[in-house]
Length: 315
Ligand SMILES: CC(C)(COP(=O)(O)OP(=O)(O)OC[C@H]1O[C@@H](n2cnc3c(N)ncnc32)[C@H](O)[C@@H]1OP(=O)(O)O)[C@@H](O)C(=O)NCCC(=O)NCCS
Image 1 (cartoon, rainbow, N blue to C red):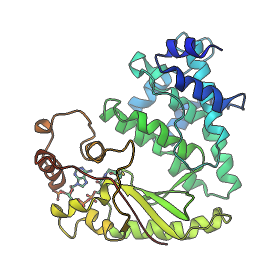
Image 2 (tube, rainbow, N blue to C red):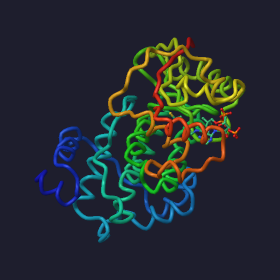
Image 3 (cartoon, rainbow, N blue to C red):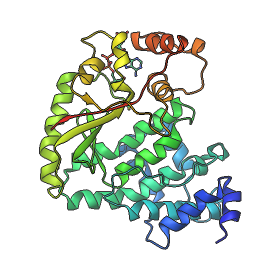
Image 4 (cartoon, rainbow, N blue to C red):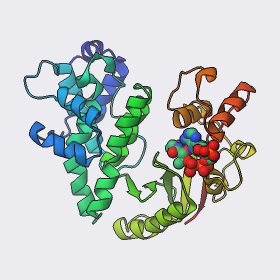
């Protein structure tokens, strides 16, 4: 295979194709589910009807003219790359960000990879005794991400295509209100899905579930703390939000690490991503419906910046 040629046809940098080629090597891939079974699987993964229709339209069936040899190669090797790290819990790009406007086969290539890995990760969950309801609730984050991707006109997908490899490798579990990512530094990293208010009661219940879940299902790993990295932990939010708001109450649980700019993470971009679901709308065209939206806009207009903070608290 000629890396430059494939990269040219895919419209992506050659280094990124080379990375897939090296990491996947000749490791095993996994087959896609039958197209006939796909609608039921997509419904189980909380994929909304409009996204499901698009996924089915671009389905890479043998002989389909939509799925070129380069796309087939990338799909097969991306599945192998992610599968090779089954059980891993670090950030893992599954391949290059594609020119998704070329059509559904391009738009959903990493969705197909995710679907192919469902059986693989379900077997991993089963080996760890993870209950079915946790397994499916975790994997159903696919549908939420696709829905957000639609709201964001595709702007969020380069991050989401990496994010979803955590679910597909057994690196992350949804336990009630929060998602819990296994980690190296004796800490479970917390993530907050876009799923209604972040009440203290729901957070407490989710933390309690994690305290029981990880010793039971991952007894070889020792966790002593919960950690989180988020725009939600920016102390500047307290200048604007009431003390009894869910975000401020969530912040109070954490001891923050000294602030450090994280390479590749811009606090302003992350706040726009999660508060407005757009990265490129001018400030004067953003909605001012909630106290947080007004705060974000006024803060940026004043020439100030938002920060991505990391914090932790004992388990
Ligand atoms: C985290 C989250 C659930 C908190 O929402 P919440 O429980 O309503 O938070 P609060 O009680 O602190 O809200 C205080 C105010 O900010 C508003 N607000 C909170 N999150 C908001 C958001 N993402 N977008 C717009 N407004 C928001 C609330 O509506 C409220 O304003 P109001 O009194 O004018 O209605 C919410 O921000 C969310 O869904 N975020 C997306 C996911 C995310 O950011 N995850 C972390 C990624 S690192």
